[in-house]
Amino acid sequence: MAKTRSTVRPAGARRPAAGRRPKRQAPSVARASAAGPQARAAKAKAPNATRRTAKAKAPSATRRTAKAKAPNATRRAPKRAPARASAFTATAQAVGRTLGRAASALAARVRPGAGTGDAIDLLEAEHRELEALLAEGEKTTARAGGRRRELLAAITDALTPHELIEEKVMYPALKSHVEARDIVLEGYQEHHVADVVLRELHGLPTSDERWGAKFKVFKENIEHHIEEEEGHMFKTARSVLSRQQLEALGTRMRRMKARARKTRR
Ligand SMILES: [Fe+2]
Ligand SMILES: [Fe+2]
Image 1 (tube, protein in one colour):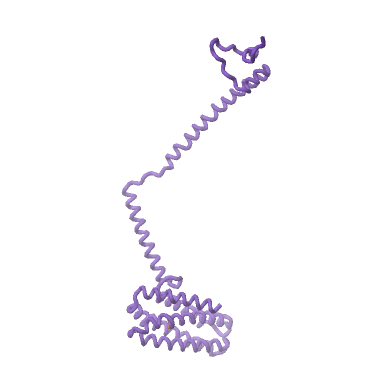
Image 2 (cartoon, helix red, strand yellow; image 1 turned 45 degrees about the vertical axis):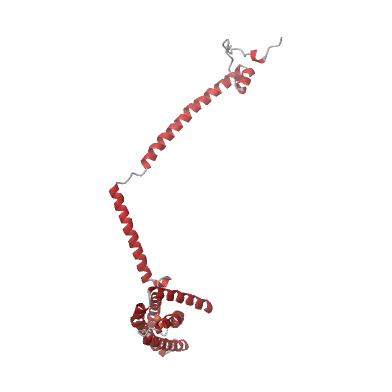
C-alpha cells in the first residue's frame, strides 16, 4: 500500500500530537521542508527576520509618529483668546473697516479723474490736468521748440473733449436754471476765445517772439474761466441739481469722451 503525502515527514520534524490535526504549512515552507536541511535552515531564518523587522520597525514607527505628531498638533492648536480680547479685536476690526470706507470715499473725491465721482468731480480733475500743462508751457523758451509743440498737442487733446462735454452735457443741464443762466452763456464765449487763441498758437512758429506772450494770454484766459466755473457755476450746479443727477451727467460725459476718443483714432 502506497504512503499518502501527509504521512511523509522530513527528518527532524515533530510528529503532530495524537488526535490533533497538524497545522497546515504555507506552500513555500512545505516546499522548503521537502528540499532538504540547508534549504530548511535558510527558510527557517527568513520568517523570524521578517517578524523581527516587523516588530522592530512597525510599532516604533507608529510610536514615533504618535509621539511626534500628537503633542505638536496639540501645541500648534491656537489658544482660545480670553473673551475680553475677542471683544477688543472685534471693535478694532469694525473701526478699521469704517476708516477704510472713509479713506476710499475721500480718495474718490480727491482723485475723481480715475473713473469715479460725479460730473463736477470729473470736470475739476480735468481742470487740474490743464493747469499743470499750462504751467509747464509758460516755463518754456523759444529754444525748446519740440517741447512747446508737445505741450500744445497735449493741451489740445485735453481741452477739446473737456469743452465738448461741458457744452453738450453740463451747460445745457444748468442753462434752464435761472441762477446759472448768465454764467453758462459766459462760459460758451470763453470757450470760443480760448479756441481762437489756441488755433493761433498752433499756426505760430514756436521760435516766434510772440509765442510766449500769446501762450501767457491763453493760459490766463483758461485760468480765469476755470475760476468762474468752479466758483459760481459749479456751486450753483450743486445747489440746483441732485447728487443722482450729477452722477448721471458724469456717466454721460465719460461715455461721450470715450466716443470722441474712438472717432479721433
Ligand atoms: Fe469750460
Ligand atoms: Fe471747465
